[in-house]
Picture (cartoon, rainbow, N blue to C red):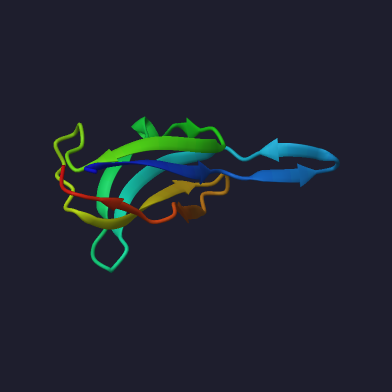
Length: 102
């Protein structure tokens, strides 16, 4: 229909000396990326670039977002970018999903 339930994994787990440590990220930004090409549409970013815990996050993407953004029908991926502890920008994308007319 006019919406999609999208999940995306953010952050990394690393082994350090027999321990598993989660990497905290900062300045999380989300964008819709058209699968067939085109400019990404910015959705949101974390307030004040605060820390974001590692995990799988779930988002409802609709043809009309709560912010008022109109999403054209089509196939998209959700892109998450964030800064790692060393300041390096990290990026991951969801699998493709479809937004249809409501």
